Amino acid sequence: MTPENSLLVWLTIGAAAVVTYGLRISGLLLAGRLPKTGKFRTFMDALPGTILLSLIVPAAVAAGPVGWLATVVTGLCSIKTGNVFISMLVGVAIVAIGRGLGW
Image (cartoon, rainbow, N blue to C red; front, side, top):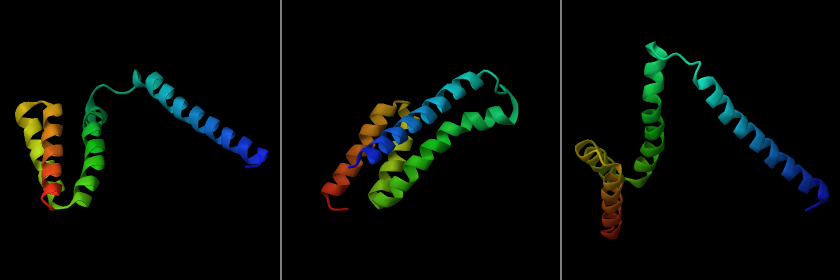
């Protein structure tokens, strides 16, 4: 790697760090100014669930039927017990057993 490329790499990493931490700090500074009621509040309350779904659904679809089963059972277990850790263990166990059986 040439010295010019090395400098470019470090500048890119530094710029990414500045942007990342700038976004985090701006989020903290602006959080107090966001509306606490109305449609925006409803949207913000739903946001964690939608982000979680955007992470879970593609993985479940890619895993096939055993992934779908694990996702449904994990969700039901979480609703029934209220314990996310146990629910995740159940989901992982279902996928492990399913893969062990060749599903």
